[in-house]
Length: 133
Image 1 (cartoon, rainbow, N blue to C red):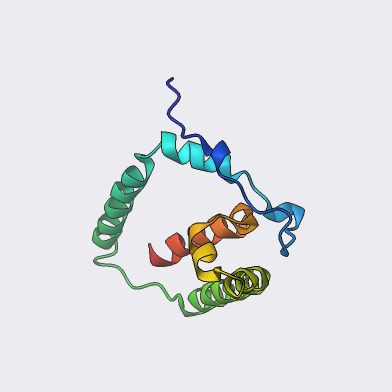
Image 2 (cartoon, helix red, strand yellow; image 1 turned 60 degrees about the vertical axis):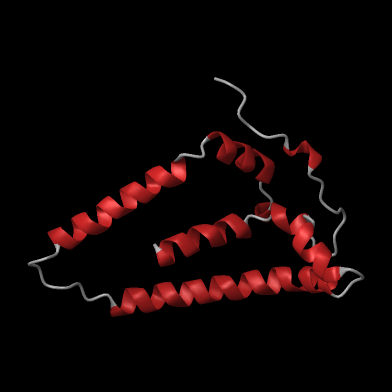
């Protein structure tokens, strides 16, 4: 197997940040970035599988009664809202301290900070894919 990963050792984060992550929130983002650069075809495969499932399930459900999902969908949307609120409350103080500092907008958009290492970011991505997809 060839070494297809990019060198993420050049990317540094500000330490210590005002935001202190809990142990369960920290994940190896450089490892996941390396995995993603080696497996760039995975999103295309998942997209094709998604389209096959959508059209296959539409055909399967064509002559059937609809499911009654009002309560489960209300619970799911409530969980998404709660997760988003907790994520905002955990990251907003650090983000606004960066944003309100000198060259804050530039730093907030162009530099990587400790926030990038939080598990809540890929978890939020996953939940958005489940919600939109």
